[in-house]
Image (cartoon, rainbow, N blue to C red):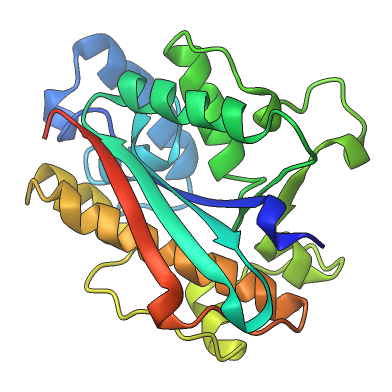
Length: 243
């Protein structure tokens, strides 16, 4: 595998509105229907209490950060470059990301890699692009393509080895494989409140970037390759809007 032809990515999402009470009436009714399905076996949950989970559904959430990483060099000289697209204006964020993706994937066989990407990151990005009226880049398209023509890697799928009943978090996989994982002061369940209550997008971006670093190191370990040394990891720049 040519690791220099892989774009590692992770996304962070939040609910479109700060709280359930901020929802317009029509959206409130639609969320009530959705919440009724996801809470059907949870007597203590209500539409309001479960609203923070709206962030994981592309119809009710939005993307506030896409962090990407790519490898340069080989063996012990590998370098990992990180770049993030983030901000409150989702459409602008997605246009910038799409433009980069079109340029990056234009000439040779390139792959995308994400943890649980096939179930979450890839389809979520595509759905939000459609909602925002943005053409889906070639690298993300799967419709009408044969399985071997879809160049999407998923570290969770790779770790399953054909087992369909298990979910393994990125954090657990990093621990199992002894991948050096930066300590986080937040986790995925806290992103919505950090964004809406704390107004701290920078903190979320840093968390997202750490996941991309861990993701790249895990794929290297899958192939018995040395991980990238900390001093060879750098953040090239961050594209932010309306901060």
